[in-house]
Image 1 (cartoon, rainbow, N blue to C red):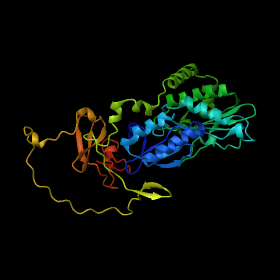
Image 2: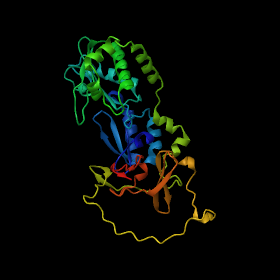
Image 3: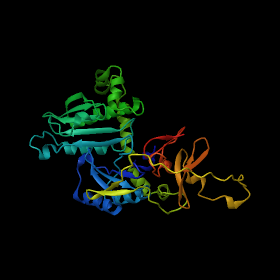
Length: 380
């Protein structure tokens, strides 16, 4: 979808957010400085997320490759906040700093996040590692959660927050780090292989015949005889990891796809910002829809004469327009959204969303209708 195509989350008004990976919530002062420098240079709104990361809002699409280049050069990677993939593995400070901590929860969380980063799944995945039963990392509200004990770790699975929160359930108790990883590899791969698309782990478990008891037999006892294959498949996914931001940064052709307009390197502002609490944010949408005056009736035009070159304007090559996607061209001071459909047809319309008056239509999702990126409403 739009987020995966541009490796960032589109926000209202058509700008994007940038979320570097911060494994386990641990970050060095130098990387903090690098993030701050980028935020100041590009005028980005910064906020700490619930997953112990730093979100940079308000990035223009054409600026994304340069922003990523700065972050990658500082040793940061894509946080995959835009994909159905591992988001974060939240941690408390554990035995390293806390007097109640039983195990090194930070170190274990960092190891796990780096192990599974970039792996795509039917839905987003979130994890947590708590250093004791006080549960400061909220591990039981995650797709997988690990809580330290005096003997090792308890591994919980299939929890989530959101609109329908659910506590994770115990898969196995008092296991070593090595066994915890082994069972987690199997669990995640089994979920990835069997869950329907857009199904969170909690809903998947609800639909799984036999529930948690059956899942324990499959993962812990190898009831289906597939655990060796699950481990090999997970090892393959881990071994094929790439930072998707760096892949774009190193590819001049991919970088071209982030231009605002296909036919020019010019840019136009697409959203109004206001200052608040020392940062800038999008101006509020009007509470009432803007009523525009009636459009003048266009004069009747003769059919195009394909032999007359003066009536055709070149705005790019076919390859400049991705299939099943929208791109924007600039004609004078007007933005035009152009859509190239999988069936070979082409459509063009104004780039302005009629609902929110934002220049975002070309960034929407395609199907039988165009879903506007700004508000999700569809245009037939």
